[in-house]
Length: 266
Image (tube, rainbow, N blue to C red; front, side, top):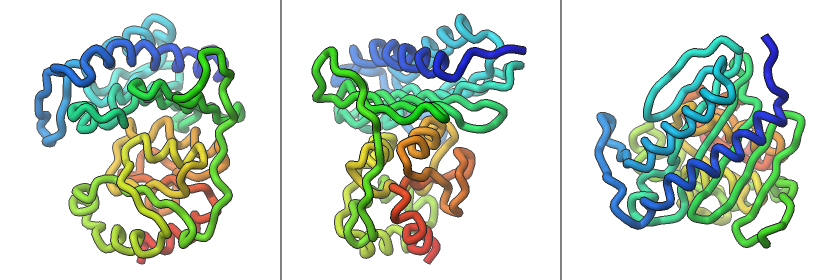
């Protein structure tokens, strides 16, 4: 069975992410119809509407591909490819009217993450990559006709000179990793709480050295692995494995990877 070239898939994902953003933004800083899911996390009309549209677009363009999404589960395919969707990563931020939320689209080929897009609708910012095609950045403060920039991680190290981003302390408590949280605070020169996808794309674009998530689902990390790798950095689980299925995730600029692994393992 033939499949579309990776570059075509990435172009499709960029357009699909933009379309999802068009569905999401009318709800932003308004009535989003918030409900609480069984795991205690929020979901909104925007999450559901955006994922439905992404699934429709994939079904029309790539009917043989599988789909896994946060809100509507898995639809098996037969092409060897699977799209992985998080219509709003950072729903808690979205609900509170904070702009640090993103549309996440990842693509697996034969169980390996090979392409991904992160679109921040409220910032109008894209970071995207595909294996062998580089990582690219459309900053929020760009001119309308500006071409994408090549995204690269920073070269800063050691960790004592770097900026570490930590997701919500609540997740470190849930993941029983409070001691690792405290060690990271002590090891880094600067620390901030910019989590979810935003923290990871800050690493991919050289604006931070590390982003640490103690709890992650595959749809949280699917686009991040190819993005960080193509930007020259790393995306791994807490054991150092390059995977989106480890249940947690750490992005680094590569320079501080070994040091971060030692710190989190204690």
